[in-house]
Length: 95
Image (cartoon, rainbow, N blue to C red):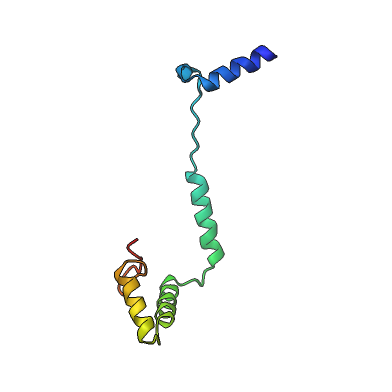
C-alpha cells in the first residue's frame, strides 16, 4: 500500500509523466440550454421584455433626477470618467 501511494504521489509531482495523465472535459451546453429554458418558463407568458426595459429606463431616469448643482457636477464627473454610464443606448460604464 505504501508503495502505491508513493507511486501516485510521484505521478502528481513529476511533469515528465504527461502520458500518465488523463484529459478531463465537460460539455455544459445542454445544462445551459436547460437553465435558460427554465428561466424563460419562470418569467411566464405575460413577460414583456420591451416593457421591462422601458421600466428600467424610467427607473434610471428617476434615480438621477432632481440633483442639486453639486450632485449634478459629481454625476457629470463620474460619467466623464466612465464610472457611471451616460445617456444613450447600452448604459454600460466604460470601465
